[in-house]
Length: 60
Ligand SMILES: [Zn+2]
Image (cartoon, rainbow, N blue to C red; front, side, top):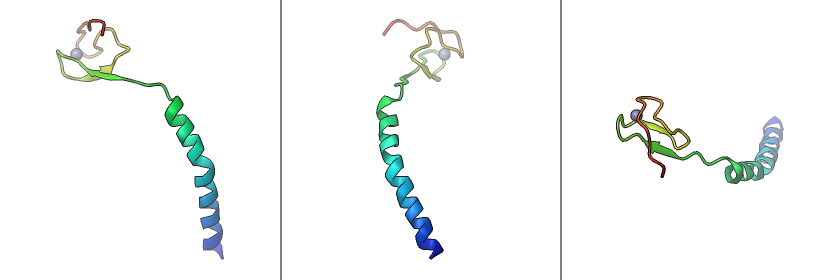
């Protein structure tokens, strides 16, 4: 019966976790990425200057 018990716990966990996961999915801060045109590395759009090569991004 141990297997059945743990399966029940798993089902309960999934049942209680998926709404939290959905809420997290929709409320998480959107972090947009852009690729630096100079060095080609990915960086956040929050950066005004490329943290890798110092290239200044224009305002989108
Ligand atoms: Zn760069």
